[in-house]
Amino acid sequence: MQGDVAVVTGGSSGIGLACVEALLAEGVQVATCGRNAEQLDRVLAPLAELHPDRLAWWPADVRDREQVERLIDNTVERFGGLQYLVNNAGASRVSTFATTEDHEWLDEVGLKFFGVIHPVRAALPHLSARGGAVVNLNAVLARQPEPHLITTGAARAGLLNLSKSLARELADQHVRVNSVCVGLIDTGQWKRRYDASDSALDFPAWSEEIAADRGIGLGRFGTASEVAAAIVFLLSPRSSYTTGTALDISGGVSRYV
Image (cartoon, rainbow, N blue to C red):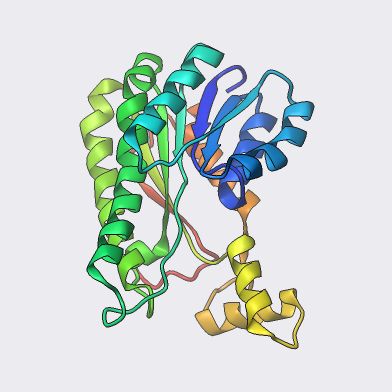
């Protein structure tokens, strides 16, 4: 993968940032984006010092087609091509059917769908020319609904179907499309929930308690770097005969076959 080019959406924190770091470690030239320009600069500037000339970033909202097109154009202009796309940008909405308004349904579906549609559409000519690969970040929630996550679960189920359809439709354009479905991952989101919980436990004990309650076989949260390692594998030539699959990185929490 050395010298190849990747775009990672939502690269200023969590799994997206871990993907940026993992790809850089493989010698890949990486471009990323986020909605908060100041956070991008703060987080990525130290990485750019370690990997001069191989990291670039621009503010962009994946729901905005024109912003995504600029991101892809800027990447190709900067690095000369594009082989890999990681669609990571997104978040979960905690709500029930009774508490979810119509505009919140539309917002959630819009983010999960167009957060993939816009980048794939903009990147496709470049990916096709190089025999590229796409990985869409998803969750076990796509197949295994959970309480209080009704909008996110439904949207992620649709994204899983969309990813499979893209894999079939883009195969003859020499583009592979796969998904990574995560369980509970130790990211900033869980740290914020811990801070808001006023728990007497420290974070490791608090997270182990949640892992036990959720039935995670390995008894702990996953890490962003563990997810990133799986994503890099699915992008790489080592998975050249793999498309249309969904790989669970969930510590054994999934109850489906």
